[in-house]
Structure formats: C-alpha cells, structure tokens
Image (cartoon, rainbow, N blue to C red; front, side, top):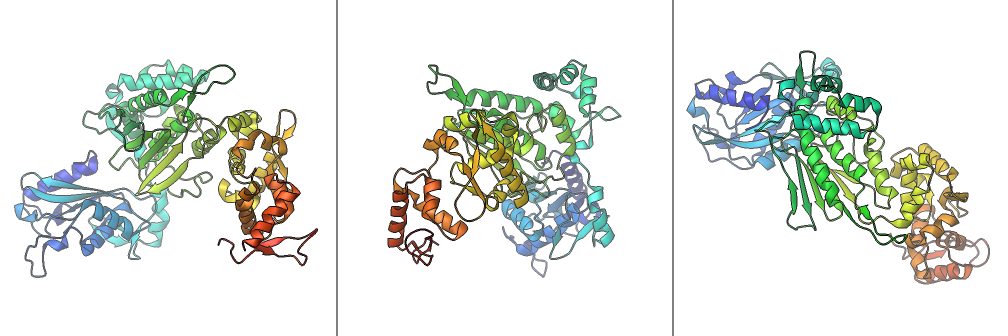
Length: 581
C-alpha cells in the first residue's frame, strides 16, 4: 500500500473493520470512509457498480477538500456504512484515474490526491484509497469551505480562514524515528563531495567534520537527535522505499533506453549523484574543428540541467507517490516532478514570483549543500545558461498535476556564444539582458510592451532592462543595442556591429526582398503602419528594395496606402483587405 503514516492508518482501520467495528467508528480527523453509491440501489440491493459514478465522485471531492483544509489524510472507498465485519467489504469498481481527475476538477482550487486501488487480502475485495495532502490554500466544493473537526466536516468560519495560512506545517521539517546511526555512509560521502566542490573555505571545513556535526550543521538533526523528513530522504537507505529519481537515456524519441538509473531504496543524495554522473558522460559530443583543434561540448549546459533536477526535488509534492522522471532523449532533457507549481507560481510568472516553498526545510538543506540558489540561482539560472550558448530558454508548464521542464540543447550556436562571452560579467549574470538578446535573435526590434511579458515584469521594469542593455559595450566600444529610428513606440535593436557578427543567425536580415514580408506583417500588427524607412533599418534593405517589397505587398492586397500621399516623403502603409488576420 502506501509507505507513510496515512497508509498505516488505512491498514489499521481496515483491520478494525474486519473485527467488527463499523466504518464510522474507525474514522478520525485524518481518516474518512465513503461508500461507492453505485454499488447499492435505493432498496439496498447490491449492484455490480460503475467505473464512473458522479454522485460518489462529488462525495469524495467534498470529503477530500474537508480533510485537506485541516491536516490532510486518507479516504477509503468501498466499505458499507453502519456495517462491521466481512459484510462491510462491498468493494468498488471506480476507476482510479477518473476519480483522481474528477476530484481535481470539482475542487476549487484544484485538489490533487493520490488514488490507488488496493485489495483487502482476507476478503479479496477491491477498494480505493485516496491520499489527501494538507492544503496550502483553502479548497471549496460546490461553493462550500469545510474542514475536519473530529470525525465531522463542518463549515469554515471567517476566523478559520484567517488562521489557515498560519497553521501550515512544513512536511520536510517533521521529525522521523531515524537517528544518526541510520545514515548511509555513501550519502554522507556525496554531501562531503558537494561541499568541497563549492570552493568555499567554510564549506570545505564543514565537509571535514564528523558525521553528527555535519548533519547538525546541515540542519537535518533536531534537538532530540532525530533526523527530519528531509534528512531521512537525503541520507537514509530504506529497502522498501521506491526510487525517487528515474533517469532514462534514449538516442531518439521512441527508442529503447540505453541507460537507466532507477535504484529503489537508496538515499536521494546517492541517487542524485549517480544520475548527475551518468548524465555528464551522456551529455557531451565532439565539436567541429575550431582554431585548429577539436574539443568536447555539452549539448545541454550542465548548470541548467542540474537546476532543473534540483528544482524538481526541492519543489515537488513529496506526499505523492512516484519518482521525479528525467528523460534524456537526443539533445533534449525533460524533467517531470509530481505535484503542480507551488502556491502562487504559474508558467507566466515563474521567473519573478516568490512563493511559499512547498518544502522549506528541504530547500534550506539543499542550499547548505550549495545545490540550490547559492550554486544555481533558481529558474533564472536555467534561462541564462541556455540562452548564453544560443539554445532556447526552458519551457515550463503544469501538465496533469505535475510540473514539466523541457531543455532543448544541441551544438552551441557559435556566433551567439561568442557574443555573450564578450559581455561584461555583470551583463552575463543579468537574465533580463539574456532574454533581450534571445528575443532579438528572431525579432528585428523590441519595445517595452513586447518585452514586459517576456521578462514577466512590468513595463517600467522592462524599460529599465532595456536601459541596462543599451548601456552595455563590447570590446571595441561596440554598443549591444541602439534605439531604432522607425515609427511607433520607443524601441531598440542590435547595433550594426552586433548584427554583422550574428548575421547568419538573424532571419530578418534578408537577402531576398520577398523574405521581408513577415517583418512587414509584424510591424503592422505592432504599430499599425509601416514605412520604407522601417524596412531599410530593420531588414538591411536598400531604398529600392524596400520600395519594391511594399509595392508587391500592396499589389497582393496585404497593405494599402494609409497616408494622403501615395508616393514621396511621408508615405506610409496600413493593413489591406488581404492582410493575414
């Protein structure tokens, strides 16, 4: 069944029901029993039951939200109310995946429960067990906020809501029954390696201390000498525990895994070290001959890959079953961690929003080991490391109640890598400047309006980022950005010197005038009009080429003259009847 205290409570409750107690008698503040209503008709006659039964799902959502709003817990499905002994085990045919999704759908905000079918061994009856996490924000179902008081679900008062966030308990900080004698020496050795690798004298000195002092300094031993949950997770080998990381290496999508790291029972630090070591050997390939020599290059920046895995470990929901999966396919890394984004975080604000960590204590331990933040400063580090070598930034999304992080690598883009290597150290550390550079690789100019959602910041902050980027000078006093002379909002583009260095990578610097059409369409959408001067500046066209482009697009009906004059100085064009909407 489940390997935590909720699983133990379920096992104990089922044993008590077998001996004659009723489901109502075994319930508690963290355990509830819900009947599968599809198993009986109104007269009480037993039925086969349904795989999908919405009235039962609604009852489960009510109960799950009620438990979550107090301390979390477990729900047993398939026991008959007011009946003890073997007759209580009527079972259920409800589908696990459907129940999980329906409960998630009915709760507001969505509530993710772990759902597993279990078989009661003495009776052979199939039951469902829902593991309900403690909520970080209050959940309601059908407009009602309830929480568990004893064995009952009661409405939450205004005072209950006010106390809700104050009573939140960090799962990773809770004590366990393990002490320093249970610590795996291999995990301690990995911790010492990580501390020495920081290059910090204080961390290196910490690595030389005896095990108890090291563990206490890391914060994983409480005053009674017990390991915290985070300490047990990182340092204790548990033979019955499932693997926490599942790494697979494939040459191509759909191919057989040629390497796999899936080691149940090991401490998480040992698993992490093994995965990182294997990833390092699989993540390089020979580069093209450069300056008379051939070298090795990472296909995915190691710092970005480490941050993706560490973030998954740090922020995942550890009260849910299942490992963090690390799919390394070709030049792509996909890391999937159970549980959605932490409270207050979404794909649209992940760069800028500070949230309450789901596992604050675990995060602190990883920081002490310099695996998190001090070593790799959050998601912005992933963005920066990918962009600096010419790769696209990470793609982060929430899919099926899990966070999915995709890093797409490959050979470094030499012109981009050379450019970013020439930036000042301050600019190389600035994720805003990295995102501006990445944006201008595909767009001929950038405005504060366009940049704000890219940076996930306000227009005022985007304007300040552009100011910093425009102040950056490369060797030879070449400016990184210059203000454009085209119409519309204040905008910036790469300077002519930078464009010359990146020309092969910039699709808007066209050799054939017809390739300027996408730029014309984009400008019209952004500023409502376009002039020949815009194409001369942004696409590198001559006056004759720019005029030819506009004449051809006018003939196609894509644009039409918007000024009073059709030729000469001051003429501009607007969207025509056949402009792509």
